[in-house]
Length: 574
Image (cartoon, rainbow, N blue to C red):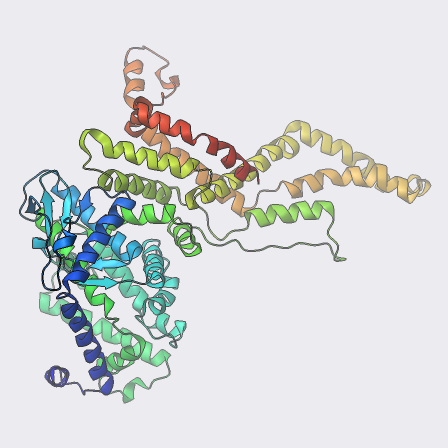
């Protein structure tokens, strides 16, 4: 009845598909409401969450302790929690706890697989010891592993602006039927819409600020002197134009369509669906965003998701997580390259050249900016969630986690990528150095000239050339003369070499800004009458590294990880 009524108001016909979708949604809500009355299930959910957070080191978040012996079918008893509603608390650490809440919910959604679906402000408390306590575990959503990785891949592709992968993500997430072609999804304009939405969400500020930014963009696009109504009409006209173009590209006679928007709506219903789980996820994260906006009007929930994403992708060794991390860092899979001689048999030199090409043939290179951004987010996640972070304990925990990640003898996804990129850099740098010495230097050019001289002289004297046996001529004249050319070909820099070396320079520049002690250099320069420009910059340890050096417990931890250096060296050598 409701579906027919709302369609009637919107002047749309009601199909059986509309009714089936509505029934699915109602059934899903009903399942949640019934589950909320199962107090034994709620007790189990509460205890499992508490156990999962302890196992993952998220000590900054907790749930009430359940008194198991008093739990009955119609009674749930937990220990009393001393605390204040997160949105009502005026403590300085509330913004950090908002980040803790986001990380906890992402952990539930993408890791433990049990999502708390009722995070209204009354269920989120700041305890007296500065932790986040989540109450009321009656309504939860089970998230299967396959869906978790589909969400990870979707987030990674959105963040890296890999919009070509979005259509397949939509199918994996259940937003589109499996039998819909990727080309049709790509042509639907979904990627442009997601790009626009992601850009707006990343800037934060909630619906109010988003509306202001959209209006500003419309004014820049259609005219600053237009009224709000005129702006809407201009945007609608452009949208209709794009819809007509899309219909025409699909072979539809646009002139024969009486209502373009209605036709596009019908076609989009064939392309897109709303999985029931989206209702719970949207409710949970929109509530968290509302709490964040009540504390900071520029709060950006998308930015708050990155710390968890960095930690998950750095530590998860599964193939799908590894692929998502590579996408986040701007990397793609290697493209095979084969080379052989004309007669089909590979010579030694050709095999070496083929190996060089294979090792460097990639469509993209590591993004230093993304790498450092994700590293910072990894540290931020550990520091914020591992403890209440009094006296810098959280920062120390972050240093330990990162040291373990890089030096773990069993390896990690990040370690594997860094070893791979370091090996590529070593390969490109070695060729660059060898080329400078063996091809481009004055001595190398002089030797090359001397090696070619006998062949050139022989070519000028046909009588003398005829006197030499062919095998002797080839051994002592032609092969030495060809050697400079072969070395030049072997050490010739590829486009990928240039990318790798540029990436290294970019990384050096970024790290230099972080580590350079410009104040010390300036102080020295001011006390010298001349020659100040030649004073070298003095490296200064970052606060994180200083903490690492001065904290004995962390130092001992790092020393324990040093055996992993040998394993790391073997991986680099391989």
